[in-house]
Length: 232
Image (tube, one colour):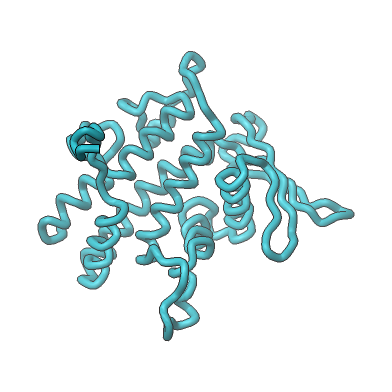
């Protein structure tokens, strides 16, 4: 158990999307929105039950993928213990990844989505950049490498696969098929896995508890009110 009020804050922050929350966390709302984008009922969705896709629900799949990457960016901040995009002077080289948005997201992807496959984490990161920056399926990294993407529904021939890639024989470009329903599933599973790991980390490190509180101030909970409440 964490000391109060951290225990209540932690439990509320990582609350399942199927629960009712009077003061919802950013993560709670985000995981529910991701469910809705993929045509699942957020009031009943449980990733451990592997629910079938409902053909009668409306879907908005590209925004759904973008929502997932927003959630992964969010979790990566807690994972790294930093929201900064420039590492402080004197930071050890082994910790510099914590203070850059790209490296910390790729570290999170490696651990919780790609089973420590750095190449696949890089592909997912480039997809995130393509969609979030340009709403496109093409990206070029800082080294000039080019990535193209196809977003695919489930394929019975490749059930359980997150992505497949092909490197061009002549131009070296990387083309990838991303199975977006598997991406959604792995995102929801990553929340649950990280929650368990993060609780253990916080229970054993008081300094990390302070970091958690600081990040909650910026990315914790959302209050919804009419603009008139602020005399606008």
